[in-house]
Length: 82
Image (cartoon, rainbow, N blue to C red; front, side, top):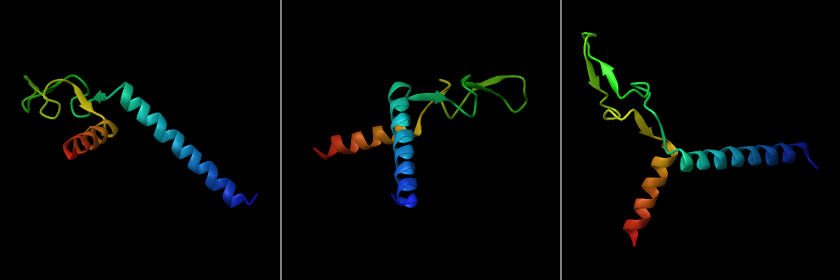
């Protein structure tokens, strides 16, 4: 077998495996911690004395993963097409 073909097949299998693992992770754990507040759901005010709810996650401390967001968007497009 040609070494270029072997490398291409190996790279394709690795990328397919990584994609499949990410899809399973998005299915099992659809949320990740919010990067802005660190998963606390609150941030310090500019003065540094008081806490405010994080505007990005609306105080939950969780954000939807990108893969799950794409899946939800495609599902809604498919559902609306019927």
